[in-house]
Amino acid sequence: MADLACRRLAVSLVVHHWCESELYPAVETLGKSLSAAREQGVLDEAALFVVYNGEPPLDSEGLSRELARFFPFPVEVLPAQANGGYGKANNLLLESIARQSFDAALVMNPDVVVAEQALPRMLWRLSGDPSCGLVVPRLLNPETGRDVYGCKRYPSVAVLAVRQFRLLQRVPALLRLNARYEYRDRRPEWEHRGVELCSGCFMLARMRFWQDLGGFDTRYFMYFEDFDLSVRAAARGWVQVYEPGAVVRHSGGGAARKPLKHRLWFVRSAFRFFMRHGWRLWRVGKAAR
Image 1: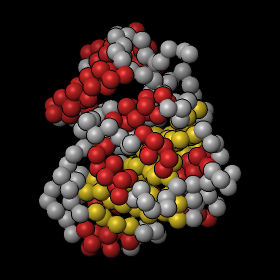
Image 2 (image 1 turned 45 degrees about the vertical axis):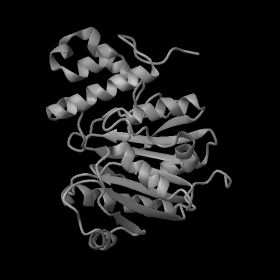
Image 3 (image 1 turned 90 degrees about the vertical axis):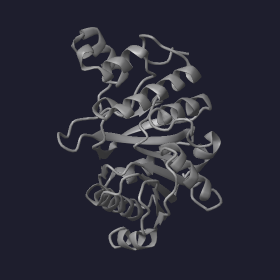
Image 4 (image 1 turned 60 degrees about the vertical axis):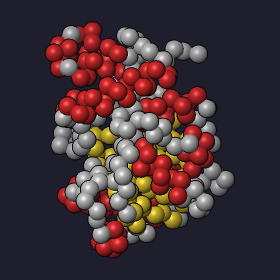
């Protein structure tokens, strides 16, 4: 266990719109969960890096001091940079800390609320399994408390279409296909090793994992950069684990509920994903090996 322990953690939080009502609860609950991990002996040190890629420029030093008032670990707001997308922003941070002594890195969205036992459970899971490279939590809707089903099987054109167009959701066969895509044949309370695709809203991974894969593929400006990462990780032998004891509430919605430009980004990224990893018209999930 000692050789596998991930006791020094870096957190990358990418922000495009600085919204205190959304960001501050994420940072505060993250701090409480990290403190619980330290108290339980699965974490020694942590540092939060807020990567801002929005407009207008912010007072990064002043905001770092502001966040430090309620975040019990070192925190730094990085100066504004050009918006190259979620993956690129995280990669820049991961590259900048590569020479530091972090064992693991967490990448997260600002629109989350972290349960106190989330990081103790995730760090325990990561430290106890040498083949495990990435751990993701159980995601819940903050308003309804229902599962969001962040883990997915390999997609098909049909299942992505039904998620974009509500009219198709009246077709029973397509609804069954979507249920399989979301792993609804497995109870959300069950641990799952070997998840095919993981949501990028809250990903904890060893530094060796990020370095082995070169981080996210920056050609995905938005959408599918997390799925691409998951497929590449599995191909290199990393096991991705869903830890149901770690709960994170995530308020982000899919592209279908966002402006038209998000749908265009979604389609472009889906096309890139299928061109790289293989097309599926109907069936979801990788073939058994």
